[in-house]
Length: 242
Image 1 (cartoon, helix red, strand yellow):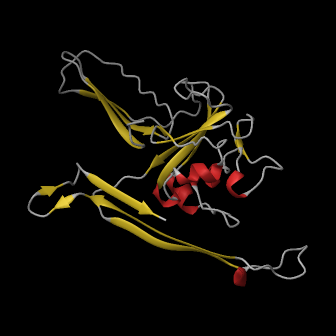
Image 2 (cartoon, helix red, strand yellow):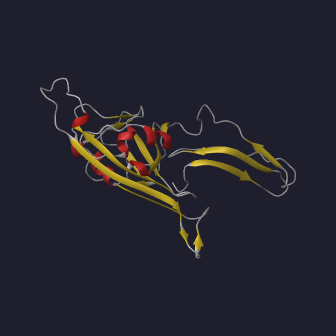
Image 3 (tube, one colour):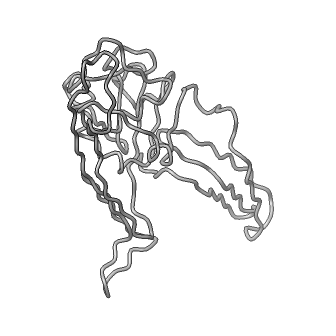
């Protein structure tokens, strides 16, 4: 959980052998990456570089996983009906997650993962459980997650997820939060739903009244204290609120 998501370069060195360097090792939320190193006899100053493409067949584990990247998180639409916008709404884009028929909306809204019993899924944010004691209600769990703008990516895992994820039935949802970078970035938004933009529903005699305003912001960058500390390449901050 302590390894940030992203693309890495793995270097292996030992005295009397050429150094081994593998590029493009991709770490995704809740994922498992393999980078086998084969050292050849030689000088450390010599190196063997491997930069193969990603494997088409995942053989490290037997789990089934769907990873949703930051680009998809930023661009996928969220359809909410008066409820809180939350990262769990994004999880429904994966084939393993499903909102059962007949399960109520509002604060009791939930779904199942991997064909398991409704509300018996597991969920973590940066390795820490975000579930509540209220039968895994999505609305309650959303309170423990940051705004959607603060999620960098997530994955939905079923069928053979690791034993470290106890008590979950069917599958796990693993969220990873954003971090600051060497550049300052930020956003401010209003998520607006208004019946002025809506059409009359098929079975409605007249168009219903519906208004929702959701404000938020995010900001991140390096920690810089003038004349005292420059955190570029070392220390970063990220904050978000909704």
